[in-house]
Length: 273
Image (cartoon, rainbow, N blue to C red):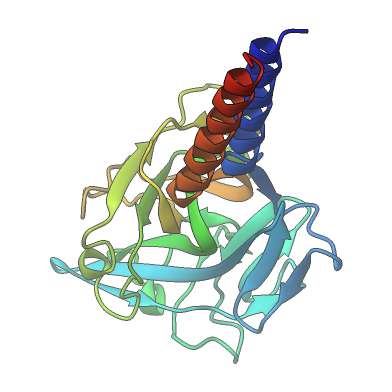
């Protein structure tokens, strides 16, 4: 093999190594199969690590009334699928609120036909007042910037599975209004485009990285860029993300590449004598 060919092979190999190290495989956070080895519960949040990326999930409710809004939460986690709180079970992540629980931090109800409404939806009424609009949502905090690939949800009792998403890199103000919470965030509306029930996956191709992701059920009114229709009810099954390639690694690649080229030239010059 000629030395030029050998040098080309070195450069190609180095390039492949750089590409693989700077754009590693993505991670799929499947909340249905979260195991004790990869996940944990921290009072009012679920923590899950996949492929070297860690995400912390917590749940909130935004009440909408009289042209104003107020965010409540985070709600404490529970392992009982019929108990008040933020739930993770075989269907995924969901939030259910019931005034029958003395542990409820705010008064309200989330019942339909005498049953607790599980999952994420827009049914939350203070003191049973159905004129109050609301929406359930989850906040996901990643320990490193990521890109969103997919979101998979599953319906509850054949309800539609439309959702809204918001991404950003600054810590959201979840103690105020939903408008303030989403200030500076990119909003995506993911309507249910299929007539059947069961799992529903939305594929994303955004190139904007983020560390915070909010996912919720839309209310009947448009607010802060979130669009309806209401009547959606779903569990969050899984979220697929990819780590952001590190530009800082490129100078190392360039330095090594120049070094190989320099050695190749020196070797080529010495071989002439």
